Structure formats: structure tokens, C-alpha cells
Amino acid sequence: MIKQEHVVIRESVRDWREAIYEASKPLLADLSITNSYITAMQAEYPVLSPNIILRSNVAIPHVAPEHGVNQVSMSLLKLKKGLEVDQKIRIHFVVVIAAIDKLQHLDALRELMELASNESILSKMLETDDTRKLFQLIQV
Image (cartoon, rainbow, N blue to C red):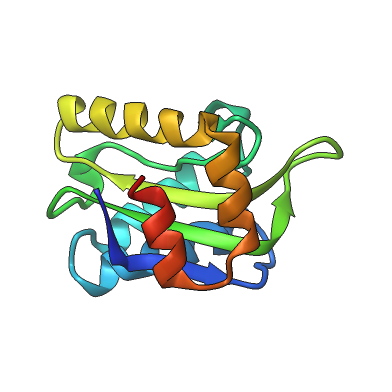
């Protein structure tokens, strides 16, 4: 569900709020979501909640479609330096999910859980600083 143009790499972000915004920018640019969707995610998750972290390295912020989803889409933000959740957890990937119904939401979560469980792919994702290669890795 992630298009190559929806893959973004940043060195770092100031905080979780900025991580949500940076991860959402490609979806906002192609009108998949509205600004209100970003605002709703930031309000729903003012701090990075363990409820939306998969396997200690992938955060998946999302809210209900009525907050501003125009079309089904996902984006991937890689943070080279990561974002510290607590002393034990540092996330490096933020995947924004924009689904228009529960079924698509569950399909997206299933795919992301498979990806987050693949240590080999996650390791390769951490090593690359090229959006094209990052996109190719998630297509496996």
C-alpha cells in the first residue's frame, strides 16, 4: 500500500508531533489526507503510545477516516537517528495509515506486522539512506 513517492528519510525530528507531520507530508501533498487528519493524529497521540508501536521499532499512527481520509494510502518515514520513546525503545520508522474502512485498516496492520517481524528486512532498512532502496525492501 506504500507508494515510492510516500517514502521519506529524515535525519531526525524534534519530537513525536513533528514525526507525525513529516510522515504525513507525502499523503497531504497528493491529497490522500487533509490537514485535519494530521491534527487528529497529533491530538490522539500527543506522546508516542506503546499501543501503536510494532516490535519496538515501527510506529503506526492513525485515526478514524472521518478525520480527513480522501483515499486509502500509507506513508513511511525513516528517522536515521531514531526517536526515543523511553530508555529501552527508540523507533526508526513511522508509518501513517489512512484507511477508509475497517477492512482496509486490518489488512494494512497485518502487512505492517509482517514487516515489523522481519528482523532481516528491518536491519537492511536501517542501513539504507536511499528512498528507492527502502521502497524496494518493503516490497519483498
